Amino acid sequence: MDDLMAWLVAHQAAVIALATVVTAITSFVIAVTTIVYAWHTRNLAIENTRLRKAGTDPQVVAYATIDPLVFSAINFVIANIGKGPARNVRFEIIAGGADFESKQVRMPHAAVTFKFLPQDDKISQFMGMGWSLIEPPVLAPFEVDLSYESIDGEKYSDRFSIDISQFNGLVRLGEPPDEQIAKAVKEIAEEVKRWRSSRLPVEVITTRERQKRDAEARREFEERVVRKGSALTND
Image (tube, rainbow, N blue to C red; front, side):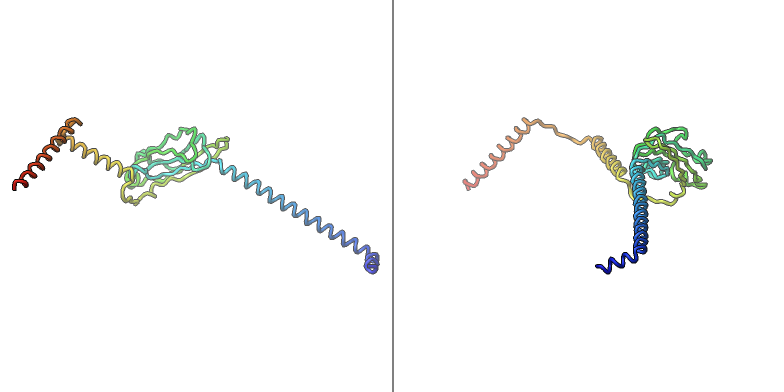
């Protein structure tokens, strides 16, 4: 122990210098750790803000699709696929559309502003029949600019390309359930109509008349049993 103390006293300057270096390194490590922690905390806060924002923001898209009920009919759709409602939804055709009149394309009026479009809701407009739109010359692709606002007033804008040629060559097999039900109901109605036109004889009987008829049938049956028993006795 005395030797250690003597060595420390002899090398006091070196020990103090080493302690100073160790303290500086420790302070530097602590400072870097604090900076890294603050940076991660900031990124985490930004990510949480983005997640909360994404959970309430609308996202409005425009596209063309085949009508689910009318085969070969093409619809123009503006749909809100986001997590919140959209306000003041407007669209504008910024490219193409010169052949709308020749193809008799029906589109929503561009000047109309849809005041409110709830989450998972959509606006669908019949554009035309597929065979007419795809018949050469095919309806040229066109671009649509969509603008809308969130419920908090934040503005959004996006562009979408609409190309009808994507439906060329598509074939549907079978019938949708709605069409099958409608067809079955129509067949039932036609069958009922045939029954009415054939005037099938229908016998209407009251409860009292039915009871009287049942009693007479029972009495006739009992009389036959008695006659059959008498004939066996005589033999």
